Amino acid sequence: EAADVPGARRLHLPETLDGSIEEIDLAGFAKANILFGRSPALGYLKPLFRRDFLERANLRYDEELRIGEDFGLVAECLVRGARYVRSRSADYVYMTHDGSISHRLKLSDLQSMIDFDRRFLTAHPQLREQEDKAIRAHLQSLEVGEAFTIMVDHLKSRSISGFLSTALQRPSALHLLSMPIRARASRIAARLLAGRAGKGV
Image (cartoon, rainbow, N blue to C red; front, side, top):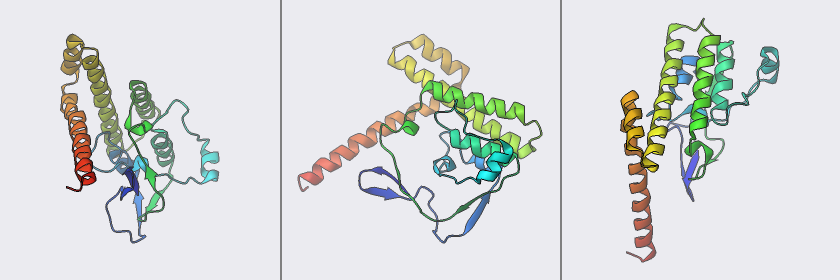
């Protein structure tokens, strides 16, 4: 479950909680973690790892990643033959708020995740075609996010030339500019509704 409004809860993955098991491969995992993707990101799940597997594979969390460290470790496990299974059940509440790290991506965080994906592709040239495509799609989404973040910084500093230069280099990031507008409109609408409710309207 996820709770991003005080007192409100929703299922992160809208599905029947029947306890059935789903197995996720590397390609599916990468696709489910596309930045700004339409599907709920599996990166918000908190996986349990077999300690003996991690020790045999000599795997640890990448200390260069402040965000996306679970993605990195799971990807490294899967490429080494691990099985990733999840139960369709709601076993914990994940709290989010405006100050959450995962909701405020810094440029340095995106660049660290981009570096990881590039290193991963270089280190594992044996990836199957679908796996390679999925990781590259994940990488591309991060690069679009990087361009979007740079454009927003240029707008904040009123650097029109910087904004236009970045937009020309990565025009696919322009559509993301509607997100902060929608988010602000939603916050204003929520405050208005709360105000009316408080007045008994």
